[in-house]
Amino acid sequence: MPCCVNIVKSMVSGMEKILFKGIMPALPTPVDSSEKLKKGVIEQLMDFDYAGGVNGFYVCGATGEGPALPVKTRMETLEAVIAHNNGRGKIIAHIGGPNFTDVKKLIAHAEKSGADAVSSMAPNAYYSHKNSEVVNYYKKIASLTSLPVVIYVTPLLLGNDLTKVFEELMSVDNIIGLKFTLKDYYLMSMLKMINSGNINIINGPDEMLLAGLAMGADGGIGSTYNVMPHRYVALYNAFIAGDIQKARQIQYDINKVVSVLIKNDNCFAAVKATLTLFGIDMGSTVFPGAKFSKQDMQKLKHDLQTAGLEI
Ligand code: MN9
Image 1 (cartoon, protein in one colour):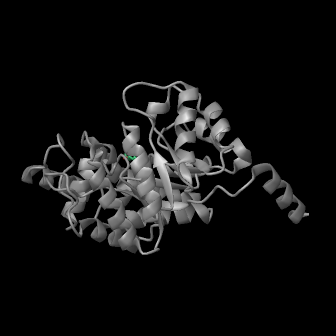
Image 2 (cartoon, protein in one colour):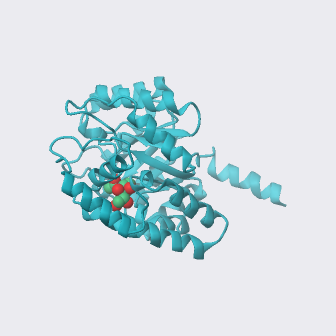
Image 3 (cartoon, helix red, strand yellow):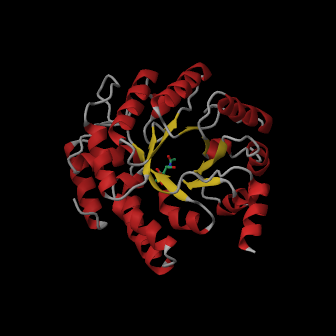
């Protein structure tokens, strides 16, 4: 009987699309004041995250400030990450940005460099596109690469009927799913039912990871994973083992720390500052992101320690 069920399931859903599972930090990009990649720092961060048990990385997304960086720096960052990764986990290259000529270059570069997938935010950051335009945008990206494509769903896509959009997009072989950075978990469940569940959904909001897993996410990608990778890995493992009490307690402990990080207007700046406190010198966010002063750093350290983070 189980064998028949499997045959029917594969006929309905086609090729396997759930390629990314577990905990994948979104890497911040350590750049100097001329927006060049600082040598050796992202490697140090990757080793720290791998020591916490993570499954791979998301590169040059929102956390990595990809759309704000020069294309050359984005390419150098991806190359440095893939070289240092050395097959230890999976690498998703975020290639989205406001200019499609740059996007095309980044897609070709990601494929040539050996990324495991490409991912893009919405077509632009200024206004909402119609469903048909969004569908055309992601189909075009998929046609330009043989890599799997992970759609980056943020509030920029909130004007769209996302279940309709994904029903259409999931028929494209190499469109595998989405990174879901919304807090509407009813919508997540509706998306997870598309393509008979053969859709890779990766949770975005770190403070809601357990909710995302419960509603069908296969894993998570997040900025604050870098600050406490082992805790997110423990949460994921507890969920997989069915120990919801434990997973919930870890999520609550995590959220004490996240609440400190998001108190800062720019959470990514706070993540970079926290990593700098750990001795991983990430620098500040790109212009016009302000530097943390000595006092800011001291206050951040104090608040994080009070929230239970060891520094
Ligand atoms: O999806 C990140 N969200 C955004 C990933 O980039 C908007 C999260 O990791 C958040 O930074 C985190 C804090 O709110 O959940």
